[in-house]
Length: 65
Image 1 (cartoon, rainbow, N blue to C red):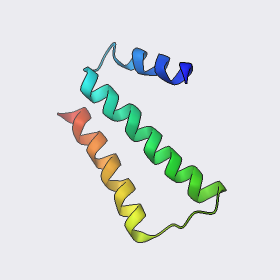
Image 2 (image 1 turned 180 degrees about the vertical axis):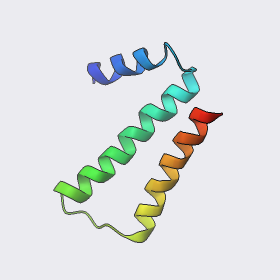
Image 3 (image 1 turned 90 degrees about the horizontal axis):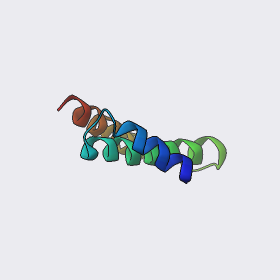
């Protein structure tokens, strides 16, 4: 947790707080989804893939805005 917060603080040196936080939480959410599917046998349904894609799209939009 300390390392994760340290990386957030590092990102905030070049990004606004809102953008850095969205990226931080989005990477965590999509990462948890991928770990669940790849290693824990969770279902890979079209709706879950669409949801993860929307999260990544939102992160890209925040970075570009």
